[in-house]
Length: 80
Image 1 (cartoon, rainbow, N blue to C red):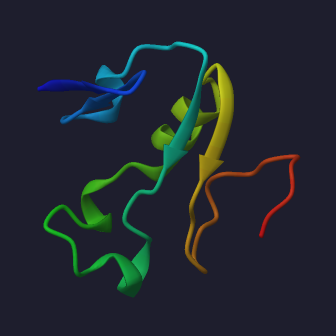
Image 2: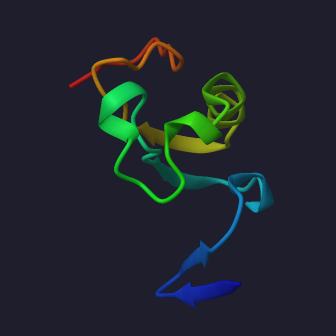
């Protein structure tokens, strides 16, 4: 399902369905380990290395959220 809002696009589905376009990418997957257990599709179902590689190849700015066990998205930019 695709929905467009104020110059944006929401895709409800697998992240690999998103087009590789210039954008600000906000990526907030379920966190690894215990922090990701409360989700319907929790951390055990996610290939974090594949997700990180996909995110690194996005065009534009990438904002990637990780928990304290996040060891998969290494960026040369600053962490907060």
